[in-house]
Image (tube, rainbow, N blue to C red; front, side, top):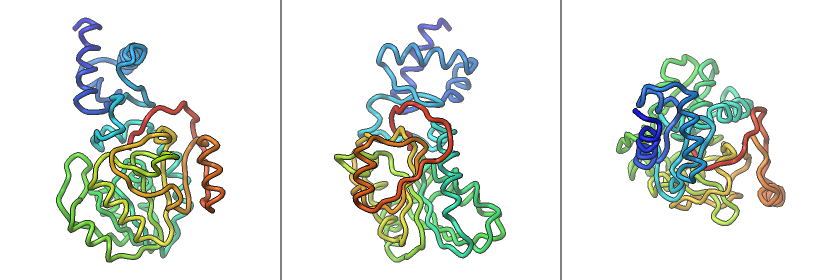
Length: 266
């Protein structure tokens, strides 16, 4: 396949899926990571895509296009890992915590396997898989309609179960963070679940990589001051810092690579 034809096909994949990782492209087109990155760089120069660390997004993604969990895990991976490492320090034995279905929180779940006397509530299948064999963890799974894209249980039953719970801490990551719109998600069902997550927790920890700042998605979740702690890998603009300081929200910058902001990855 000629390079220009391959780039046309790559663009078609990005538009159809909303996002792709470099790994996705290597498998789809039988190319090396170096070639995949060169193709993405060319498409970015044309204004056809938005590059992220690990892949690319459709420019129209933020407003309402969701992306599969597999793809999101490979985007901003180093940033998410550093955020998860910082979040781990806020989990203590004896806690009851709630984990959402985001790829960022999944990085945290994988770090909890050796913890003792911990209760984990989740509606995310991959979190269940990550912790099901952990001897010191008691798992409580929220049921509902299974959504294959997010690998999560969603809908009315899941929302009803969450509304009846009270946990010590919730760790979550919606798709967008904006000074004007607050916290937002790509889909209404995701936004409703995140509202339940926030309402159920005594302490709310927002885990967001810097690509999510200044992104407004389709469905409103909550104001920016609905959380107690924000963990990110790169300091946001001063407007966020000032607002959170005034509202008593703590901001923690995780140790990790500092990269230019692009767009949301989930």
